[in-house]
Image (cartoon, rainbow, N blue to C red; front, side):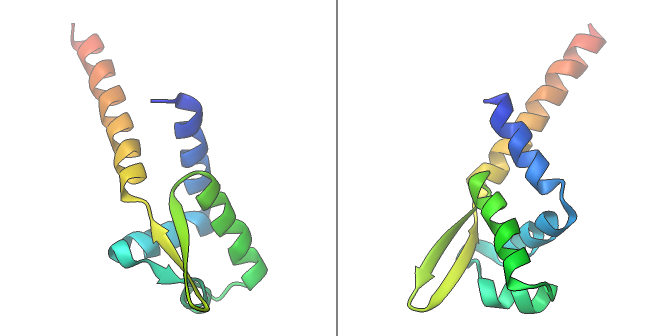
Length: 100
């Protein structure tokens, strides 16, 4: 797995607002949430929310999909699974090395 990509994804999730956005989206399941709904729940300006969403999209953590006039943010569970797998594999490799 590309370490640069993993570092970028974790960097973006390291920001409190971005992590909060991602948590809301993951809880929403595969249908995602409309940007307007996120803005109301988080009570942050649209421009600030757009900035944070753009960073999450660039890291591959979410995708956006338009349905009519509504723009949805959809969590990318495969990306989340890849990050978790990366951590688990790295943890297990380190542990096996230490135990030997």
